[in-house]
Length: 352
Ligand code: NAD
Ligand code: IPM
Ligand code: MN
Image 1 (cartoon, protein in one colour):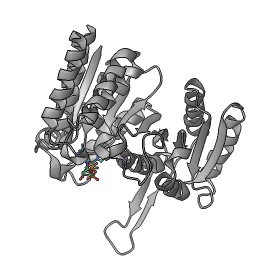
Image 2 (cartoon, rainbow, N blue to C red; image 1 turned 45 degrees about the horizontal axis):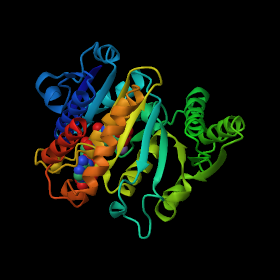
Image 3 (cartoon, protein in one colour; image 1 turned 60 degrees about the vertical axis):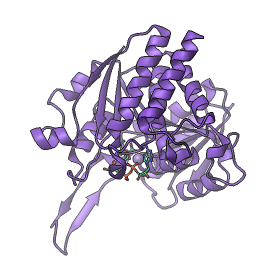
């Protein structure tokens, strides 16, 4: 399998080194070869060359079996141009419409909620990933003056809304789940979110075995804290999904734990931790690499390497149980030592 790796900026570099280590280790364990190609696209690269990604960059990416990204974002690029072109650009150009973000607590001790544990925190969020307010349709008039007008449109298309909602129901059906909750803000956003309402009714009618519920996004944010056990599958738009999955990160013990896939079923897809480049933590060997490592597990699952994916997840759970983790989740190890412990665990299992 050929994997493009964009470590990116800040702790993206730190966690990616460990994700690649674990990937190589699982490859050795299962006798599978991963050809990892590192692409230098990052803030450093942009600031030294003026290039975010090459003119044929998206085409280059399409030729890999999968793409792994650490994180993009650097205070030296205040308009975030390189991150928008590399990350959002790839989501749009490769039409990675499914943002798959599982929220699964791996150890009761990591729960931030009183009296809630593993059995209560186990759901997936499907975030629409190619539309919404992320499309950058709009503009600024009289920018920089007191008369400035800034317009940022939210785009919702029938095709875009339909395919993500359908994907959520298909996921539920395939995985024996019985509840899908759609979250929008149709009480205030009566144009675009009326479309979400209409499509949700249309698609849910095709899945009589799945209970379809709706919550406004503000209420959903509240219930995620109060009663996360009610959710199995959440489907929502691009911006709300972004926010909700940082809450999801907290529910898993911290943002460093959360994994994600940006997927177009059957095509080259991109996998990355949910967190960003966390500049204050960069290069200090403190960032938690588990979100990145679990993202490689999602990548392998999506590529059909289920045993390998499962092995990574099992090793992560075992490492957490043994407190072989970074300090943000109560361990004493650094980023590198956490990655090495996981890689060693996989090798031991292979030998046993
Ligand atoms: P962030 O996710 O980088 O960090 C927020 C806080 O979460 C950190 O200060 C830290 O306390 C904690 N955290 C995050 N990841 C962690 C890890 N692996 N281990 C331990 N703690 C961790 O969010 P931010 O500070 O808002 O953004 C920083 C930069 O990252 C910005 O430029 C932003 O645009 C970018 N960003 C990129 C991505 C991405 O590439 N997918 C995602 C989010 C933010
Ligand atoms: C994420 C990030 C990105 C997003 C940023 C870096 C543009 O927060 O992947 O969750 O908002 O999608
Ligand atoms: Mn985010």
